[in-house]
Image (cartoon, rainbow, N blue to C red):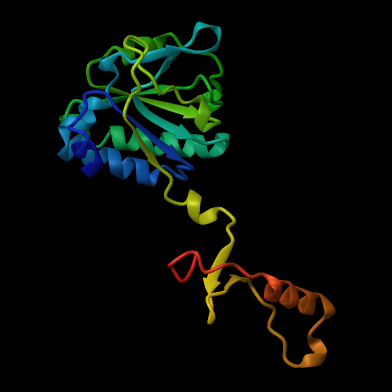
Length: 215
């Protein structure tokens, strides 16, 4: 919300979550927007009409919520969470609803575009919920103006799960890679493989060009 306000409260936005899990975080964000920040919620509604043409002439709604999730089972759980949110009294009182796009999902065994969703999308307070296998498949521009739509990306757990290399500066300004070692009770248990790992780690030297003590 702070970043949205810093951009001057744009009238059209999209919210993307990569790896939504059970849908808890996206529901918390939407609940807060729908009940406390009406401008943010209104900017997500499909009444803004920002669409692009997808494969086979299918319309892809750029404005709204986009969930990047490859697992059908998790998509179903995310949809269930959003449906529960949609039925909450505070959300209903605000007059908002969700329009679920199944064009890229196996949710509810709907594999083709459902024309009945078009009527829902036209509702003034309907927020389009879309699923994608890849981040690159999320439409980012307004089809009418060609302008990019302000995008907010959430990936709460994704970065934590990515493999990284961590380095730490030691005495003398040299860099060493931080590795996971193997605990041993005595020298006899220390295998040759462990020795090789330690030797390899000791040979890794990096210049002290960086001012920070770790990377």
